Amino acid sequence: MYLHWIIFSLAFGWVSAVDNCSYMSLIQHLGLDGDNVQMKSMRPVYNWTTPTKAFVDLYVTSITDVNEKAQTISTQITYESGWISEFTKWNARDFCGIQMLSIEKDKMWIPDIVFTESVKTEFATTENPYVKLTSYGLIAKFETIAVTSACKIDLLNFPYDVQTCSLTIHSPMHPAFELTLNSYSSASFLTSSSKKAFQTQGEWELLNINMSKANASTLQYPQDQLIYTITLKRRPLLYVITFISPVFCFLVLDVASFFIDAGGGEKLSFKVTLLLSISVLLLILNDKLPSTANEVPWIGVYCITIFILIGISILETIFVNFLMAKGEQILRPEPHLDSTSAVTDTVKDFNNPSDSASDRNENQSHSLSSLKQILKKSNSVTDENRVERRCLYWTRGARMINIIFLILYIITIMVLLGIIYNAWFIK
Image (tube, rainbow, N blue to C red; front, side, top):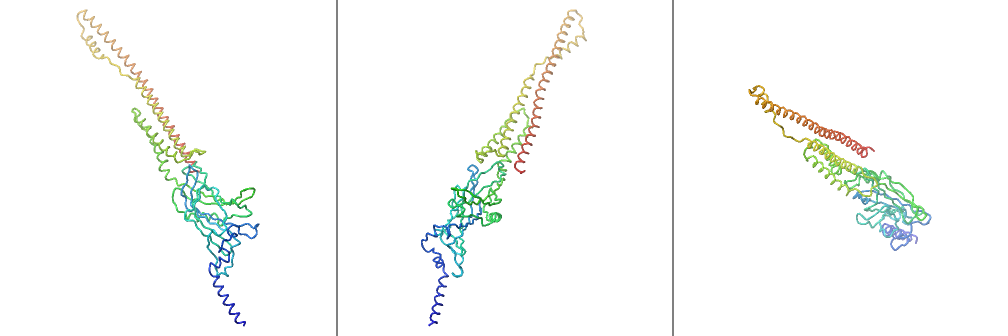
């Protein structure tokens, strides 16, 4: 009789053991096979005073866009979260060593964790419909999302700028005594893992990810917050090629234009062409930089200052040309009297005197008129020398102004480049 009961017990236990090896038996054991309101809607604790512990990890896998005008940054993020559920614990030995179970997340309570700075959040791939349950009560969720978040972008050192953007994670519904937020991994691990998984090699380089914990107050209840600070560095090569180098070349050409002859109009037209070229680059730069910046970026100071310098050099060229033209107006050619023949005739008359008194009188009057012409010519030459000296004063003054302006121009350029270099490269 006892033997029958032993055989029956062994057979029933073997069948139960076989049944407990399926996921369905575990689902039934946890009460997830039906519409369980407790699992879906209630925070997974037996005592409401027990806070639910949640853990979050955030990895930046790519930076798709940084909009300077809109002050937003678009990133692709791998978001991992987990929380402790007292309702989903089981002994793995009772279910043939099953330690993890995947189940639809619609059947579970999920903490409402959001990004404070988010402007737009969407799934980068198909939404993951499952969560992972573990035997010790941890529920894990993995998502890859595209987040467009607000970021205060400081463009003072553009294009050698380093931007710092924050992503704040918190629960809008649960205060700190109901839900606590903690980071699962350290900041150094998040940074190294994000750099390994970084998928783009575009304009921005990921430097590091820092994590800090803070508290906020909603309806007089404190709430936990996790603040992930993402530090990015711009790669400036594109802007060096398209903005900085061309403007500097225009500046060098403007300095070289001081050695062009100012007599014609080629020098002035050349400088005006340089000014128009820089104005085109300024229009392109205006489309890139936001109009609401509190400070003028150094690249704007660089371009505008060079624009003003070339404009001043054009004014200086116009003034120098005016002085040169003034000197040329003073110097006017005048007709010269031919006194050589008169002098020769006079000398001949003295060498060959006439016999008659009338001839001698006539020769004397002719000699006097010749001497008057010689005196008049001498006075004319003296006046011409005086006019040439006045013309030389105007020309010499124009050249001195040009040389002094060139020296001051070069000194100003060196000071400007020193200030820009100090702002961009000496921190």
